Length: 244
Ligand code: SF4
Image 1 (cartoon, protein in one colour):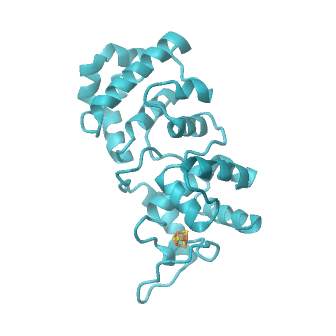
Image 2: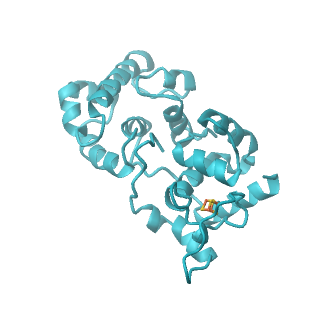
């Protein structure tokens, strides 16, 4: 894919959704960190339900340490893998209090040293909380980048590095959100909605889904799919998805 096409793709995604962000609910960098750790193999909707109970009670590392393991688990037990996530969050809170003055560090190395925080989670925090042009490649971005040929790669890390190199600078900050949302609602895993896709004429995927009888691609239909109303609808993430 050439640069002009890539630029046009991001111009259209930006026009349809000028201020994209994560669908996880959070009010501080620490809340975002906890929400992203909880979102591994869980839906954003499920995480938001649990954190709506947890954060009013405890939304600082020390407050979560004070809750203790049983107290924390009681708030997050509706989320998959809550036992190991509770242990990781408590261990991460201990490090934040002991080594970072209770603050979430801005450095990748320090973030990835926290239990439960891998490269992808660190990228989400760096991008969404600290405004760094980091690219957290989840299952959606991996699929969309490869299908469209915006940035092809055999591993999430390879796609991440290509995206960072190939996405025009002006779109880097928000590209991660646009690609996730596009993958979650339009370029879905099993049957991409190519007839509603606002970048169909630019996408280089050869096996596009044909339009159902009577349906045609319209810019407005595609734009609606990217719009806030649908995005706020809380669709499910695939089970293999870790964070967004
Ligand atoms: S045209 Fe189809 S395959 Fe290409 S980005 Fe759109 S939905 Fe995905």
